[in-house]
Length: 186
Image (tube, one colour):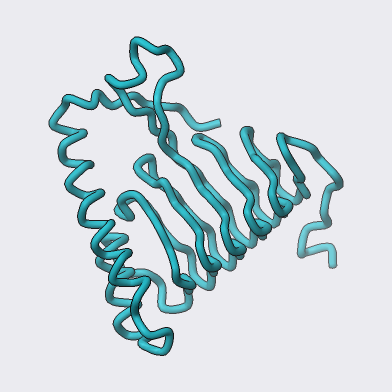
């Protein structure tokens, strides 16, 4: 599990993040109404949203929602299905050839559970999804999780802990169903 960090909601850092959230809301609303065939405009909006060149082989199916975009990195050949939500203030890294099915939610942000701190801070922890992972429809991955290479996260799973490489996980929770053979052994 990757380490969680607290950001005070009355800080300059939070104000800067909030400005980026407003920009991301504008960019995703524009992205989600583009004609599907307007690949060049979609690519330009994704590059503006993510703050870096999105690989030309990566594909994001609209509609798509995210909090800020800036900390998200898509790997070559990765695919993000329709109606995915990335709450990405903590940063999301998606490895090459990773398939993210429709309605997946990746959550890198939240609030402390203590009532006294709940409104005073947001918490962030990155999500890392390694290469060649398949995440099933409507799965949810929580802050600080790393999903190991060549793994499968089942549809509807709620992943709260790291997923080892070459593992099939179903939910809710963290259940190992079976281990997969690495590509070199096939």
